[in-house]
Length: 252
Image 1: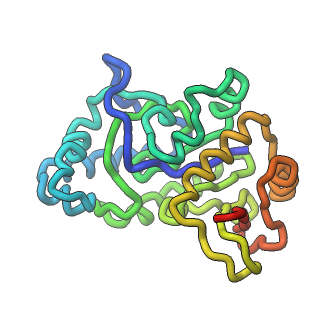
Image 2: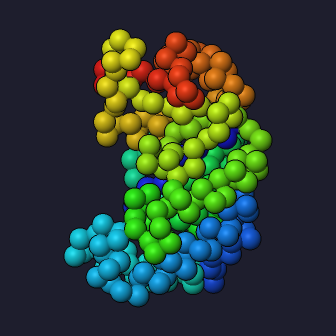
């Protein structure tokens, strides 16, 4: 199983002294041509602070984020799950997991970002700023990632539990039959349920933490539903449609 998370806008600064980005150290190397092209576009864009602030949808105080992009090829790296911060990653709490669940995370969790695509939990990445809806000279990010999407999913033999947000999901949709996208919804009749709001991030983090602690092994939607029924997560098997399943959150 591969559990797929979105990145966060907020990121920890710094990294391992003396290190810098090496694309050969990132997982799923079929993406490297697009990674390289996007990095060049990001560095080029960051040379014009005003244009960069607009393209990255940043306000006047966003200059430090532009500087991160200026330095992205030479700044130090750290593991992806240590780089990303915020509600989801705080709820996952990889720092205080016992060795066995942490090993599960290392083997099972990935993050799909606008700049690096799919990486494993502890692949080394620098600090940067780029969102799924950022504007770069090479055109829409979804179109650029589409150039390697088929090759990417050929490198992923596992069943994919897709916990990305819709924006990141659209950059590289999981092929039909290879996984399931989880839609977090409030209680209500199937087909009329409303999406969970900001709380979806903490729910996703807690879900992955629970999967890790229990050492979950899910190779199908049926396995996910069965695991959920045992561990307090209401995956509605009757809601399954076109690769999407509802996870119904009580009291949301």
